[in-house]
Image (cartoon, rainbow, N blue to C red; front, side):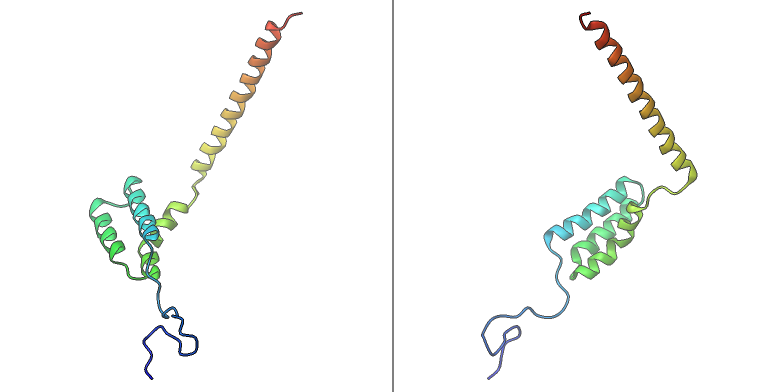
Length: 117
């Protein structure tokens, strides 16, 4: 008796064929979104983005798809590392804190002035 690929002789149920899994539509869309974001951020030019999108939709395995957009995802996830960037964020946090404290004091003063004595 010959068995067709993907079937097991004992119970007749189909088995998943071994090998790489094809990327789903959602995975393809996610990869295309990473390419689009890289163009928007100025990390890719349109020619390179077109090449990557073509390769993305031709990908036959999840691994192939991951290899295409791995660098784009890694670049996007990197936090700012220069001391100038850190100083900017620290100073922004200080300004927000001062603004919030000033607003709270003014709100308290206005509410206190409006309350009946």
